[in-house]
Image 1 (tube, rainbow, N blue to C red):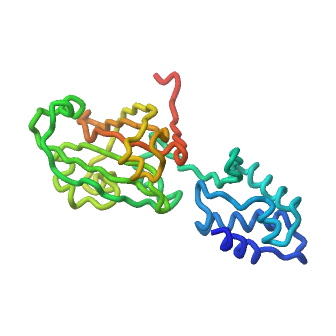
Image 2: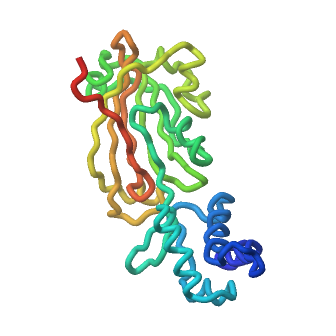
Length: 248
């Protein structure tokens, strides 16, 4: 990646241009980000390596990185250097994962479970069903730009997902096509330590802190549509939400 980055940025540099070299370098790195050569968490070459590889002064590199730092496109981390910072902005009141991430990158699923199961006594209360009712279970690893960022496990009354094995993309898009619309959602957030298997699926080390979101959705009549949780990489997500204060 390092040589590809230097080659791409080098193509953008023109010493004869009226645009200062540090701005050309900054723009070259922005192009590398837009073309997905650099993604969230990518570590840039050191200032020295960039200066030598691009044939510019270290002062030029420092000024370019300072501009990117001010824009929030990179961060400096002790022991790691300068890293690209493009966290997933996930609006807790803004719809499903797939629809939101399509605006920020390429969203994909790695399916683990899509099946009908018998509702347990533990799930019957949050789903407001009887134990032994049939429910759908879906479990998947969520990917953004081919990087695993979360593991989602959801339980859904059978009438709202009678053929879970046929679900391919967005659950909310599937619901919209059948005039099923979430109206109210309850969230609970907590810190979570992954199991060894979960850490492996998310390509992180065991003990890496994750954010766990527990969700329950209702339609406008108050019927429970889904209940479950997602464990999310805390280095990839930025959770946003909006609350109206003093509503009558």
